[in-house]
Image (cartoon, rainbow, N blue to C red; front, top):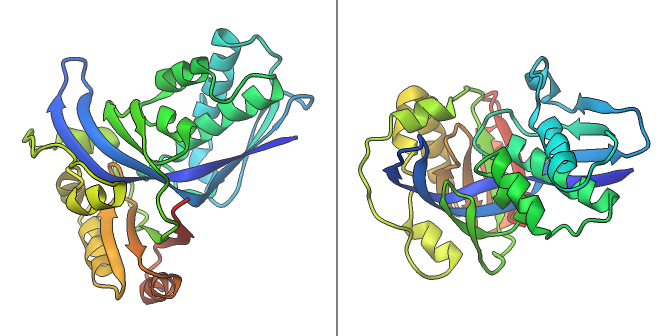
Length: 274
């Protein structure tokens, strides 16, 4: 049995620069990862197929061609023809919530298959597969702080961030990525600034927050509550939402914020930058 972590992805900043002729958007984003997320368990000798367990498994029932299965198929087509494996996805992250759950799962599947079949986890072909699977999958395969450009797939690794406490909050409202991007106002507000990742994040923004708030006003409520908590260093929405995050100076402040938001029925995760 091979086990691979699929940690949640955060966009510490997300600057939308332009609409592209191919239907995508030109982005600049600061990727970071936290210590917690989903898990992929792969048994090369087990009965072929995907089993989904965990608290958010129900959200993927009936999905059909899951990104995990697409990653397995692409590995066999482009890297090494291998028998299908028994794969378990332990789904702990909300589905379609702006923190890269599906992309992280696909990246973890590629890493697990590489380990199982003697392929280096930094093999360039894995990153080619990742880019074919989705814009965030290469960053999740890299699994460390980076600037992403283009669709987010052109990566510039950054020095490791300090292990700051982070609180993730999702209000349980589905937000369509396509709908959020469609409502972007088309204004280029400039690039991510130079300097360290944390300084650039603090000076940055998420250009998808206004359209996400228009679609799901509760996002604004989450952000306002997080920003008002003692000890918060940065409160922002991740990706296209609806998950928001707050970074804190210390663990006590993070725990206090989680307690302050308790009872609202929102999903909360106390974790840390990894």
